[in-house]
Amino acid sequence: MSGLHKASVMTAEFVLISRSGDVPESLRPVLLERGLVVASLEALLDVAWERKPETLFFDLRSETVDSINCTLQVIAANFSHSCLVVLHDCGISLEVASLLLQQVDGEWDLRTQSDPDARWLCPAPLTRPSLFRLQAGAQTLCTWHESVYQMLQTASRLSDSRVPILLSGETGTGKSTIAQSIHRWSGRADKPFVFFPCGAVSRDLIHAELFGHTRGAFTGATHERPGKIEAAGQGTLLIDEVDLLTLDDQAKLLRVVETGQFERVGTVDTSLSRCRLIFASNVDLQSQVEAGRFRSDLYFRINVLELRLLPLRERRRDIPLIAVDCLQSLLPEHGLAHVNVTLRLLHALAEYHWPGNIRELRNRLLRGLTLCEGSEIQLEHLGLPKLDGGPVLSGLGRLGQSLVGQVAEASREAIVTCIRAHGNRKAAAARALKISRSTLYRKMRGYGIQEQELCAEVTTT
Image (cartoon, rainbow, N blue to C red; front, side, top):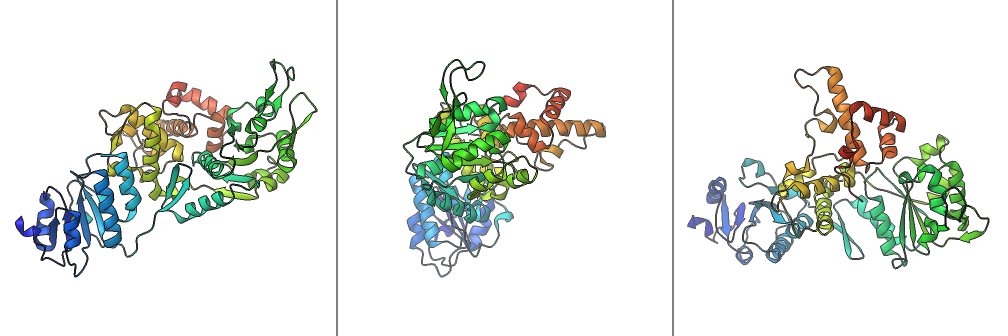
Protein backbone atom coordinates (compact mmCIF):
# COMPACT_ATOMS: atom_id res chain seq x y z
CA MET A 1 0.00 0.00 0.00
CA SER A 2 2.98 2.32 -0.23
CA GLY A 3 1.59 3.86 -3.40
CA LEU A 4 -1.17 5.34 -1.31
CA HIS A 5 1.23 7.63 0.56
CA LYS A 6 2.71 9.50 -2.38
CA ALA A 7 2.13 13.22 -1.91
CA SER A 8 2.37 13.75 -5.67
CA VAL A 9 -1.32 12.90 -6.03
CA MET A 10 -2.72 16.42 -6.10
CA THR A 11 -6.26 15.67 -7.33
CA ALA A 12 -7.24 12.78 -5.06
CA GLU A 13 -11.00 12.42 -4.77
CA PHE A 14 -10.77 10.52 -1.49
CA VAL A 15 -8.35 11.02 1.42
CA LEU A 16 -7.95 8.83 4.50
CA ILE A 17 -6.56 10.49 7.66
CA SER A 18 -5.17 7.65 9.78
CA ARG A 19 -2.33 7.73 12.30
CA SER A 20 -1.95 3.96 12.07
CA GLY A 21 -2.05 3.91 8.27
CA ASP A 22 -4.48 0.97 8.36
CA VAL A 23 -6.79 0.97 5.34
CA PRO A 24 -10.13 -0.89 5.49
CA GLU A 25 -10.41 -3.56 2.82
CA SER A 26 -13.50 -1.92 1.32
CA LEU A 27 -11.58 1.33 0.82
CA ARG A 28 -8.45 -0.14 -0.74
CA PRO A 29 -9.66 -0.23 -4.37
CA VAL A 30 -10.98 3.33 -4.23
CA LEU A 31 -7.90 4.76 -2.53
CA LEU A 32 -5.50 2.93 -4.89
CA GLU A 33 -7.16 4.41 -7.96
CA ARG A 34 -8.35 7.83 -6.80
CA GLY A 35 -7.15 8.34 -3.23
CA LEU A 36 -4.48 9.28 -0.75
CA VAL A 37 -3.61 8.23 2.81
CA VAL A 38 -2.08 10.73 5.21
CA ALA A 39 -0.89 10.01 8.74
CA SER A 40 -1.31 13.50 10.16
CA LEU A 41 -3.05 16.82 9.78
CA GLU A 42 0.25 18.43 8.80
CA ALA A 43 0.65 16.00 5.90
CA LEU A 44 -2.87 16.84 4.72
CA LEU A 45 -2.08 20.57 4.70
CA ASP A 46 1.30 20.05 2.99
CA VAL A 47 -0.38 18.78 -0.17
CA ALA A 48 -0.63 21.38 -2.93
CA TRP A 49 -4.20 20.62 -3.91
CA GLU A 50 -5.12 21.29 -7.51
CA ARG A 51 -8.69 20.39 -6.52
CA LYS A 52 -9.93 19.63 -3.00
CA PRO A 53 -11.00 16.01 -2.34
CA GLU A 54 -14.69 15.14 -2.43
CA THR A 55 -14.56 12.96 0.69
CA LEU A 56 -12.35 12.84 3.77
CA PHE A 57 -12.24 9.64 5.83
CA PHE A 58 -11.23 10.22 9.45
CA ASP A 59 -10.03 7.28 11.57
CA LEU A 60 -10.85 8.10 15.20
CA ARG A 61 -8.54 5.46 16.65
CA SER A 62 -5.45 6.79 18.44
CA GLU A 63 -6.93 10.31 18.39
CA THR A 64 -7.30 12.48 21.49
CA VAL A 65 -10.01 15.03 22.22
CA ASP A 66 -7.57 17.86 21.40
CA SER A 67 -6.40 16.28 18.15
CA ILE A 68 -9.98 15.62 17.02
CA ASN A 69 -10.92 19.19 17.82
CA CYS A 70 -7.91 20.54 15.90
CA THR A 71 -8.56 18.28 12.91
CA LEU A 72 -12.20 19.29 12.70
CA GLN A 73 -11.33 22.99 12.84
CA VAL A 74 -8.80 22.59 10.02
CA ILE A 75 -11.28 20.62 7.92
CA ALA A 76 -13.96 23.26 8.49
CA ALA A 77 -11.55 26.04 7.46
CA ASN A 78 -9.84 24.37 4.51
CA PHE A 79 -12.15 21.60 3.27
CA SER A 80 -15.61 23.07 3.83
CA HIS A 81 -17.03 21.47 0.67
CA SER A 82 -15.71 17.97 1.36
CA CYS A 83 -17.87 15.26 2.89
CA LEU A 84 -16.55 13.83 6.15
CA VAL A 85 -16.90 10.14 6.94
CA VAL A 86 -15.90 8.94 10.41
CA LEU A 87 -14.43 5.44 10.46
CA HIS A 88 -14.35 2.93 13.30
CA ASP A 89 -17.31 4.31 15.22
CA CYS A 90 -16.66 1.98 18.14
CA GLY A 91 -17.79 3.99 21.13
CA ILE A 92 -16.55 7.47 21.94
CA SER A 93 -16.79 9.71 24.97
CA LEU A 94 -19.54 12.30 25.30
CA GLU A 95 -16.92 15.04 25.02
CA VAL A 96 -15.68 13.73 21.67
CA ALA A 97 -19.25 13.15 20.47
CA SER A 98 -20.14 16.73 21.36
CA LEU A 99 -17.15 18.03 19.36
CA LEU A 100 -18.08 16.01 16.29
CA LEU A 101 -21.77 16.93 16.44
CA GLN A 102 -21.11 20.64 16.91
CA GLN A 103 -18.62 20.92 14.05
CA VAL A 104 -20.12 18.55 11.52
CA ASP A 105 -23.82 18.63 10.66
CA GLY A 106 -25.13 15.09 10.85
CA GLU A 107 -27.84 15.49 8.23
CA TRP A 108 -25.41 16.66 5.57
CA ASP A 109 -22.02 15.09 5.89
CA LEU A 110 -21.39 12.95 8.97
CA ARG A 111 -21.71 9.30 8.05
CA THR A 112 -20.53 6.56 10.35
CA GLN A 113 -19.84 2.99 9.39
CA SER A 114 -17.11 0.54 10.27
CA ASP A 115 -17.26 -1.11 6.86
CA PRO A 116 -17.94 1.59 4.25
CA ASP A 117 -19.55 0.61 0.98
CA ALA A 118 -20.94 2.41 -2.06
CA ARG A 119 -23.54 4.28 0.01
CA TRP A 120 -21.03 6.93 1.08
CA LEU A 121 -20.11 7.75 -2.51
CA CYS A 122 -22.28 10.84 -2.86
CA PRO A 123 -21.60 14.45 -3.90
CA ALA A 124 -20.59 17.00 -1.29
CA PRO A 125 -23.21 19.61 -0.42
CA LEU A 126 -22.86 23.00 -2.13
CA THR A 127 -23.50 24.80 1.15
CA ARG A 128 -23.05 23.69 4.72
CA PRO A 129 -25.41 25.10 7.39
CA SER A 130 -23.96 26.83 10.44
CA LEU A 131 -24.43 25.83 14.05
CA PHE A 132 -26.00 28.61 16.12
CA ARG A 133 -24.73 29.09 19.68
CA LEU A 134 -26.07 31.21 22.55
CA GLN A 135 -24.60 31.43 26.04
CA ALA A 136 -26.94 31.07 29.05
CA GLY A 137 -24.79 31.41 32.17
CA ALA A 138 -22.41 28.46 32.23
CA GLN A 139 -24.52 26.61 29.65
CA THR A 140 -24.16 26.93 25.87
CA LEU A 141 -27.38 26.45 23.90
CA CYS A 142 -26.75 25.01 20.43
CA THR A 143 -29.08 24.49 17.50
CA TRP A 144 -28.87 23.91 13.76
CA HIS A 145 -32.27 25.60 13.26
CA GLU A 146 -32.33 29.34 12.64
CA SER A 147 -35.94 29.64 13.87
CA VAL A 148 -34.97 28.11 17.21
CA TYR A 149 -31.98 30.44 17.45
CA GLN A 150 -34.15 33.47 16.70
CA MET A 151 -36.58 32.41 19.44
CA LEU A 152 -33.70 32.11 21.92
CA GLN A 153 -32.33 35.50 20.87
CA THR A 154 -35.74 37.09 21.43
CA ALA A 155 -35.99 35.49 24.87
CA SER A 156 -32.51 36.77 25.74
CA ARG A 157 -33.24 40.32 24.60
CA LEU A 158 -36.43 40.53 26.66
CA SER A 159 -35.10 38.77 29.75
CA ASP A 160 -34.90 41.99 31.76
CA SER A 161 -38.32 43.26 30.72
CA ARG A 162 -41.28 42.90 33.07
CA VAL A 163 -43.52 42.02 30.13
CA PRO A 164 -45.18 38.60 30.68
CA ILE A 165 -43.91 35.81 28.44
CA LEU A 166 -46.04 32.91 27.20
CA LEU A 167 -44.20 29.72 26.32
CA SER A 168 -46.25 27.43 24.09
CA GLY A 169 -45.49 24.02 22.67
CA GLU A 170 -46.17 20.34 23.11
CA THR A 171 -45.45 18.64 26.40
CA GLY A 172 -41.78 17.86 26.94
CA THR A 173 -40.41 20.45 24.50
CA GLY A 174 -38.30 22.17 27.17
CA LYS A 175 -40.48 25.07 28.28
CA SER A 176 -39.14 24.98 31.85
CA THR A 177 -35.56 24.90 30.51
CA ILE A 178 -36.18 28.01 28.39
CA ALA A 179 -37.81 29.75 31.38
CA GLN A 180 -34.72 29.03 33.48
CA SER A 181 -32.50 30.39 30.69
CA ILE A 182 -34.55 33.60 30.62
CA HIS A 183 -34.07 33.85 34.38
CA ARG A 184 -30.28 33.34 34.05
CA TRP A 185 -30.04 35.97 31.29
CA SER A 186 -31.89 38.54 33.40
CA GLY A 187 -30.76 40.76 36.24
CA ARG A 188 -32.80 38.50 38.54
CA ALA A 189 -30.38 35.59 38.14
CA ASP A 190 -29.34 35.81 41.82
CA LYS A 191 -32.99 35.79 42.93
CA PRO A 192 -35.26 32.72 43.28
CA PHE A 193 -36.62 30.80 40.29
CA VAL A 194 -39.91 29.14 41.31
CA PHE A 195 -41.72 26.52 39.23
CA PHE A 196 -45.47 25.99 39.79
CA PRO A 197 -46.97 23.05 37.82
CA CYS A 198 -50.74 23.51 37.86
CA GLY A 199 -51.29 19.98 36.57
CA ALA A 200 -49.51 18.44 39.57
CA VAL A 201 -51.67 20.21 42.18
CA SER A 202 -55.26 19.38 43.10
CA ARG A 203 -57.68 22.01 41.81
CA ASP A 204 -58.96 22.49 45.38
CA LEU A 205 -55.45 23.45 46.52
CA ILE A 206 -54.18 25.48 43.55
CA HIS A 207 -55.49 28.76 44.99
CA ALA A 208 -53.81 28.27 48.38
CA GLU A 209 -50.58 26.96 46.81
CA LEU A 210 -50.32 29.90 44.42
CA PHE A 211 -51.45 32.75 46.66
CA GLY A 212 -50.67 31.32 50.13
CA HIS A 213 -52.96 30.99 53.15
CA THR A 214 -53.30 31.99 56.78
CA ARG A 215 -53.64 29.66 59.73
CA GLY A 216 -57.18 28.25 59.95
CA ALA A 217 -58.12 29.44 56.46
CA PHE A 218 -59.48 25.97 55.69
CA THR A 219 -59.54 22.49 57.21
CA GLY A 220 -55.97 21.28 57.61
CA ALA A 221 -54.40 24.77 57.48
CA THR A 222 -52.64 24.44 60.83
CA HIS A 223 -50.11 27.18 60.15
CA GLU A 224 -49.57 30.21 57.94
CA ARG A 225 -47.91 29.49 54.61
CA PRO A 226 -46.71 31.80 51.82
CA GLY A 227 -47.68 30.90 48.27
CA LYS A 228 -45.50 30.51 45.19
CA ILE A 229 -45.98 34.17 44.25
CA GLU A 230 -44.45 35.27 47.55
CA ALA A 231 -41.76 32.58 47.41
CA ALA A 232 -40.55 33.98 44.07
CA GLY A 233 -39.85 37.35 45.73
CA GLN A 234 -38.11 39.54 43.16
CA GLY A 235 -37.13 36.53 41.09
CA THR A 236 -39.03 34.61 38.43
CA LEU A 237 -42.22 32.53 38.73
CA LEU A 238 -43.04 30.00 36.00
CA ILE A 239 -46.71 28.95 36.02
CA ASP A 240 -46.89 25.79 33.92
CA GLU A 241 -50.13 24.47 32.38
CA VAL A 242 -51.86 27.77 33.17
CA ASP A 243 -54.86 26.53 31.17
CA LEU A 244 -55.77 24.23 34.08
CA LEU A 245 -56.61 27.14 36.41
CA THR A 246 -60.30 27.66 37.20
CA LEU A 247 -61.97 30.79 35.84
CA ASP A 248 -62.07 32.17 39.41
CA ASP A 249 -58.33 31.62 39.90
CA GLN A 250 -57.71 33.12 36.46
CA ALA A 251 -59.47 36.31 37.56
CA LYS A 252 -57.24 36.57 40.65
CA LEU A 253 -54.15 35.87 38.56
CA LEU A 254 -55.19 38.61 36.11
CA ARG A 255 -55.07 41.07 39.00
CA VAL A 256 -51.54 39.96 39.85
CA VAL A 257 -50.46 40.41 36.22
CA GLU A 258 -52.00 43.90 35.98
CA THR A 259 -51.24 45.35 39.43
CA GLY A 260 -49.08 42.83 41.31
CA GLN A 261 -51.72 42.72 44.07
CA PHE A 262 -53.12 39.60 45.69
CA GLU A 263 -54.46 38.27 49.02
CA ARG A 264 -53.65 35.08 50.85
CA VAL A 265 -56.56 32.71 51.43
CA GLY A 266 -58.18 33.63 54.74
CA THR A 267 -57.29 37.33 54.87
CA VAL A 268 -58.28 40.61 53.23
CA ASP A 269 -54.82 42.12 53.64
CA THR A 270 -53.34 42.91 50.23
CA SER A 271 -49.78 41.92 49.34
CA LEU A 272 -47.68 43.13 46.43
CA SER A 273 -45.73 40.85 44.08
CA ARG A 274 -42.56 42.03 42.34
CA CYS A 275 -41.65 38.79 40.58
CA ARG A 276 -41.31 38.24 36.82
CA LEU A 277 -44.15 36.07 35.50
CA ILE A 278 -43.65 33.45 32.79
CA PHE A 279 -46.56 31.28 31.68
CA ALA A 280 -46.47 27.96 29.85
CA SER A 281 -49.11 25.82 28.17
CA ASN A 282 -49.16 22.79 25.90
CA VAL A 283 -52.62 23.57 24.51
CA ASP A 284 -53.87 26.30 22.18
CA LEU A 285 -55.09 29.00 24.58
CA GLN A 286 -56.93 30.83 21.79
CA SER A 287 -59.16 27.78 21.30
CA GLN A 288 -59.65 27.58 25.07
CA VAL A 289 -60.82 31.20 25.04
CA GLU A 290 -63.28 30.46 22.22
CA ALA A 291 -64.58 27.45 24.16
CA GLY A 292 -65.13 29.58 27.27
CA ARG A 293 -62.55 27.70 29.35
CA PHE A 294 -59.99 30.51 29.53
CA ARG A 295 -60.57 34.19 30.20
CA SER A 296 -59.96 36.37 27.16
CA ASP A 297 -58.70 39.29 29.28
CA LEU A 298 -56.08 37.11 30.96
CA TYR A 299 -55.10 35.60 27.61
CA PHE A 300 -54.46 39.01 26.05
CA ARG A 301 -52.47 40.16 29.11
CA ILE A 302 -50.13 37.15 29.21
CA ASN A 303 -49.82 36.84 25.43
CA VAL A 304 -47.85 40.05 24.98
CA LEU A 305 -44.95 37.92 23.79
CA GLU A 306 -45.39 34.27 22.81
CA LEU A 307 -42.41 31.99 22.26
CA ARG A 308 -43.31 28.75 20.49
CA LEU A 309 -41.09 25.74 21.11
CA LEU A 310 -40.82 23.26 18.26
CA PRO A 311 -41.38 19.53 18.87
CA LEU A 312 -38.36 17.32 18.29
CA ARG A 313 -39.83 15.91 15.06
CA GLU A 314 -39.51 19.41 13.57
CA ARG A 315 -35.88 19.85 14.65
CA ARG A 316 -34.36 16.44 13.94
CA ARG A 317 -30.87 17.84 13.33
CA ASP A 318 -30.76 18.94 16.98
CA ILE A 319 -31.67 15.54 18.45
CA PRO A 320 -28.07 14.14 18.64
CA LEU A 321 -26.89 17.38 20.29
CA ILE A 322 -29.76 17.29 22.80
CA ALA A 323 -29.11 13.60 23.53
CA VAL A 324 -25.45 14.26 24.41
CA ASP A 325 -26.49 17.20 26.60
CA CYS A 326 -29.05 15.01 28.42
CA LEU A 327 -26.47 12.28 29.03
CA GLN A 328 -23.95 14.79 30.38
CA SER A 329 -26.52 16.02 32.91
CA LEU A 330 -27.68 12.50 33.84
CA LEU A 331 -24.21 11.15 34.66
CA PRO A 332 -23.57 13.14 37.88
CA GLU A 333 -27.23 12.83 38.93
CA HIS A 334 -26.83 9.05 39.03
CA GLY A 335 -23.28 8.81 40.32
CA LEU A 336 -21.68 7.77 37.01
CA ALA A 337 -18.26 8.96 35.88
CA HIS A 338 -18.54 8.45 32.12
CA VAL A 339 -20.32 6.60 29.34
CA ASN A 340 -19.49 5.99 25.70
CA VAL A 341 -21.84 6.30 22.75
CA THR A 342 -21.58 5.65 19.04
CA LEU A 343 -22.37 8.28 16.46
CA ARG A 344 -24.54 5.69 14.76
CA LEU A 345 -26.71 5.52 17.88
CA LEU A 346 -27.00 9.30 18.14
CA HIS A 347 -28.13 9.61 14.54
CA ALA A 348 -30.54 6.70 14.92
CA LEU A 349 -32.28 8.74 17.61
CA ALA A 350 -33.06 11.37 14.99
CA GLU A 351 -35.11 8.81 13.04
CA TYR A 352 -37.63 8.36 15.86
CA HIS A 353 -40.57 10.79 16.07
CA TRP A 354 -40.47 11.32 19.89
CA PRO A 355 -44.13 11.98 20.81
CA GLY A 356 -42.99 12.93 24.33
CA ASN A 357 -40.22 15.18 22.95
CA ILE A 358 -37.21 15.98 25.18
CA ARG A 359 -38.80 14.47 28.29
CA GLU A 360 -39.23 11.11 26.53
CA LEU A 361 -35.72 11.31 25.05
CA ARG A 362 -34.25 11.96 28.49
CA ASN A 363 -36.16 9.05 30.00
CA ARG A 364 -35.04 6.69 27.25
CA LEU A 365 -31.43 7.71 27.79
CA LEU A 366 -31.82 7.17 31.53
CA ARG A 367 -33.10 3.68 30.75
CA GLY A 368 -30.03 3.14 28.56
CA LEU A 369 -27.68 4.24 31.35
CA THR A 370 -29.42 1.85 33.73
CA LEU A 371 -29.40 -1.18 31.44
CA CYS A 372 -26.08 -0.84 29.61
CA GLU A 373 -23.36 -3.30 30.51
CA GLY A 374 -19.91 -1.82 30.74
CA SER A 375 -19.56 1.78 29.67
CA GLU A 376 -21.28 1.94 26.27
CA ILE A 377 -24.97 2.50 25.54
CA GLN A 378 -26.45 0.40 22.74
CA LEU A 379 -29.61 1.23 20.80
CA GLU A 380 -31.41 -1.82 22.20
CA HIS A 381 -30.90 -0.50 25.74
CA LEU A 382 -33.27 2.40 25.00
CA GLY A 383 -36.28 0.17 24.32
CA LEU A 384 -37.55 2.29 21.43
CA PRO A 385 -40.61 0.99 19.56
CA LYS A 386 -40.06 -0.30 16.05
CA LEU A 387 -39.62 2.55 13.57
CA ASP A 388 -41.31 0.78 10.69
CA GLY A 389 -44.82 1.13 12.09
CA GLY A 390 -44.57 3.76 14.77
CA PRO A 391 -45.00 3.15 18.48
CA VAL A 392 -48.72 2.44 18.18
CA LEU A 393 -48.99 0.42 14.99
CA SER A 394 -45.82 -1.65 15.28
CA GLY A 395 -47.65 -4.55 16.92
CA LEU A 396 -50.47 -4.79 14.38
CA GLY A 397 -50.89 -7.59 11.91
CA ARG A 398 -49.54 -10.41 14.06
CA LEU A 399 -50.47 -13.83 12.83
CA GLY A 400 -53.26 -15.52 14.76
CA GLN A 401 -54.40 -12.36 16.55
CA SER A 402 -57.91 -11.02 15.97
CA LEU A 403 -58.56 -7.43 14.90
CA VAL A 404 -60.10 -6.72 18.31
CA GLY A 405 -57.00 -8.06 20.03
CA GLN A 406 -54.68 -6.02 17.81
CA VAL A 407 -56.64 -2.82 18.45
CA ALA A 408 -56.67 -3.46 22.21
CA GLU A 409 -52.91 -4.07 22.24
CA ALA A 410 -52.26 -0.92 20.22
CA SER A 411 -54.55 1.11 22.50
CA ARG A 412 -52.81 -0.17 25.62
CA GLU A 413 -49.38 0.68 24.20
CA ALA A 414 -50.58 4.14 23.16
CA ILE A 415 -51.90 4.89 26.68
CA VAL A 416 -48.73 3.70 28.42
CA THR A 417 -46.49 5.65 26.00
CA CYS A 418 -48.56 8.82 26.39
CA ILE A 419 -48.66 8.70 30.21
CA ARG A 420 -44.90 8.10 30.39
CA ALA A 421 -44.27 10.94 27.94
CA HIS A 422 -46.29 13.27 30.19
CA GLY A 423 -44.31 12.38 33.30
CA ASN A 424 -47.10 10.13 34.73
CA ARG A 425 -49.49 13.09 34.90
CA LYS A 426 -52.87 11.54 34.12
CA ALA A 427 -54.71 14.82 33.48
CA ALA A 428 -52.17 15.92 30.87
CA ALA A 429 -52.16 12.47 29.25
CA ALA A 430 -55.97 12.42 29.10
CA ARG A 431 -55.99 15.79 27.34
CA ALA A 432 -53.39 14.62 24.83
CA LEU A 433 -55.43 11.47 24.13
CA LYS A 434 -58.62 13.62 23.90
CA ILE A 435 -60.49 11.57 26.52
CA SER A 436 -61.71 12.40 30.01
CA ARG A 437 -59.64 11.52 33.06
CA SER A 438 -62.31 9.06 34.23
CA THR A 439 -62.23 7.34 30.84
CA LEU A 440 -58.45 7.10 31.06
CA TYR A 441 -58.60 5.43 34.49
CA ARG A 442 -61.31 3.05 33.26
CA LYS A 443 -59.18 2.02 30.29
CA MET A 444 -56.15 1.59 32.55
CA ARG A 445 -58.12 -0.81 34.73
CA GLY A 446 -59.49 -2.62 31.66
CA TYR A 447 -56.03 -3.10 30.14
CA GLY A 448 -54.42 -4.00 33.48
CA ILE A 449 -51.98 -1.08 33.41
CA GLN A 450 -50.17 -0.86 36.76
CA GLU A 451 -48.57 2.23 38.32
CA GLN A 452 -45.13 0.61 38.50
CA GLU A 453 -45.28 0.07 34.74
CA LEU A 454 -45.91 3.78 34.21
CA CYS A 455 -43.20 4.93 36.64
CA ALA A 456 -40.50 2.67 35.22
CA GLU A 457 -39.17 5.34 32.84
CA VAL A 458 -40.26 8.54 34.54
CA THR A 459 -37.67 10.94 35.89
CA THR A 460 -37.81 14.46 37.26
CA THR A 461 -37.43 17.20 34.63
